[in-house]
Image 1 (cartoon, rainbow over the protein chains, first blue to last red):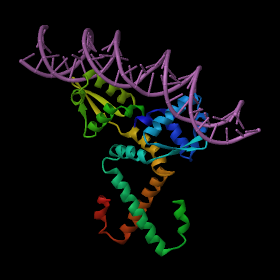
Image 2 (tube, rainbow over the protein chains, first blue to last red):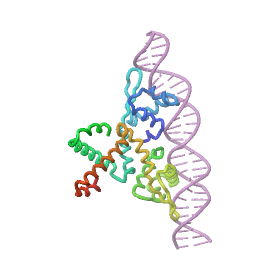
Image 3 (cartoon, helix red, strand yellow):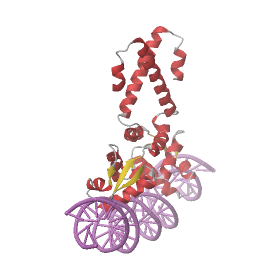
Image 4 (tube, chains in turn brown, cyan, green, orange):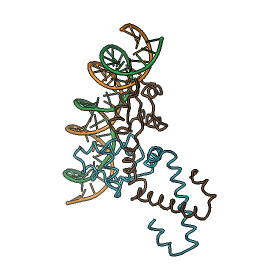
Length: 116
Length: 116
DNA sequence: GAAAAGCGTAACCTACAGGTTACGCTTTTC
DNA sequence: GAAAAGCGTAACCTGTAGGTTACGCTTTTC
């Protein structure tokens, strides 16, 4: 939780949303020095928000959103009065059922599947 | 976002989830000094996460979860691959439509409305 | 109206987060 | 194999977050 308090680290997470990136490319997007970014990456690494892998002479970073879900769950108790994530599950269940029912009636709706 | 980085402030938010509380009762739940808690409350106040009201000689604090929604939205882009909140909106829309359709067919389902 | 209750603020201190420069290690390149 | 590329770490400096004590201002109480 402390890891996403810093704006630089948050932006790194956003960057990594598009896929893996090398440490150099990440550092290039900031005006602060490269070692500074390197330490931010270490914090993200130790928080489990990011995984790294050595490829040749460069180190690739990859997003690991699993830990963020934990935070999302914590937020849930405030955003919705209570049982928010439970309600979300209920919503998904309903939708899948809806799609199944509709699919039996019409095949033209399959184009909307990917859109939705 | 920086406001919820501190564990004390997070616990204050959790406490306030049950309803309004006076500054004294909040401070009583922590081992740190009362002025320290008072400053944490100021941070929460300035972040808009909490509203305060003077009642007699004591100041009551109340949760304002509106700002937390902003954070929840930010988290959305990670918890779900992309367009999570958009998908959530789509989900809700779908569900409402489902309910409307079902309501026309049967009135017995109205009991499930509150459950879902 | 004096005392006590309830809070906020000011002044001060300390730990630490976040920045920089200097340096060293591995891997690629020519 | 020497040079360069790509990163991480160590050492150091500074601002600030978070703690404490001292103090002052209302409002209740007796």
